[in-house]
Length: 316
Ligand code: NAP
Image 1: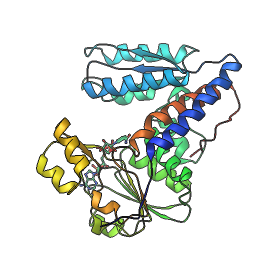
Image 2: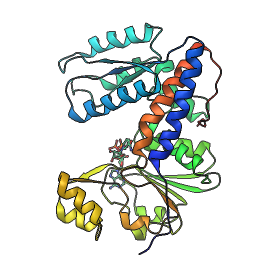
Image 3: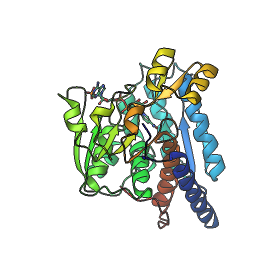
Image 4: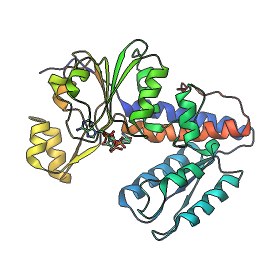
């Protein structure tokens, strides 16, 4: 099927946001302020190391000072609490990010709650979650905040639209639903206990899929012309599965042959053909997350140091 759907290019939107952040960093520098980000990376989780490296690298490119703290796998909750307390107290640190997941023996919730809400650039602290709930200015989770930017910058309407969110995690689904509600969408949240998910997804003007199940949303589950936002990042390593998701796609087949894997979202690629607009995987939502982290770091610096806002990035 030939698709008329508009591809929402996350890489381009992320680049625009990063350029704006860099501009803001320059204007803060003129006032003698260099925003600072501290990233805490415990142990050696390969994927976490890659994410952190990329966060540190992007910070450098935008003029944000970053530092990495790398306690060993054996670190205790108490030791990490002391480390966070030190980062909370240091004036040159504007943002604190604890890379998840933490080792099993560490009390993740206690640590996330120990981060000063003013420096909580991931937006995971209950104070920030509460502010988002109340529609008040807050540091908000990067992935759903990035999705709001995709919608806004692509001129896609939210007000009065029926938005259906698949997934209710604290990191993506719940804050996503709240941001869409604050932007006056009518919001439905589905999860693993929802009976007949297709009943809801077929009614969605905006469908956000964040469940971590490759190709879960099929063509018969979407309303033609809908905006499809695919948050899922699923690595597929089985050749038959790749052929099932991307029949006749020579580019994917070549990529799979070369790397032995490819990424597929939570929305089946066949559903994209029916969409009015959609975010591809890769190159969609994933590209926004780090850009929004950089945005949050500068926002935290500005707020905490009492500098007025100049950014074009919309608030939730
Ligand atoms: P999570 O914490 O594992 O939450 C998954 C959610 O999906 C849960 O609420 C779960 O429901 C629901 N769910 C699972 N299976 C389902 C099913 N068969 N039908 C309906 N709902 C189902 O995951 P997450 O952290 O939110 O991440 C979701 C996906 O987004 C993953 O693929 C992840 O890799 C990706 N992600 C991408 C980015 C990015 O930058 N693009 C950022 C974060 C996450 P229950 O609550 O009932 O268990």
